[in-house]
Image 1 (cartoon, rainbow, N blue to C red):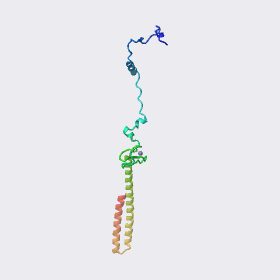
Image 2: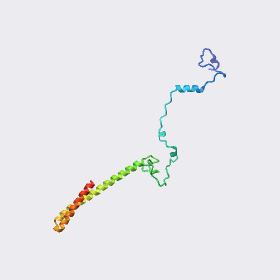
Image 3: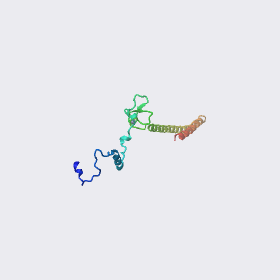
Image 4: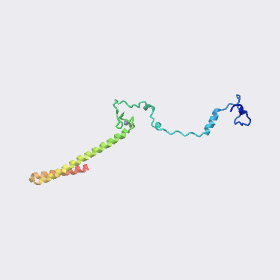
Length: 167
Ligand SMILES: [Zn+2]
């Protein structure tokens, strides 16, 4: 459709024909009106990469701390060098503090179990030794046998104390 055909009176113009001297169309105002009519676009959901994005200061050291630094040790999970005093591994975010806590709890548990086993072993040896000593005392002359009997009795007493501590 060319310009001349729009002069046809049968064509109803929505907007008055403009010439060079006509009023300037306020483009900004029209754009604002259109923007008000168009519903706001749905905000983009945070992508995975946006959520794990690290601050600029850290990404500059993505290769990690200097492995020769005295406070840098290999991470127990990914074996890459990381700061010993930081809670999370520089590379894999492994919780080093929680890991250390678990190791300490396990160490204490092992120590308690070993201690209990030693106490129980000692208690059984004292019990058997004391019992045997008291039996032997019967076959000895009274002067010596009395000392054996008392010695065996104290072994049994000590055995009871060890059993109490070990269980
Ligand atoms: Zn790691």
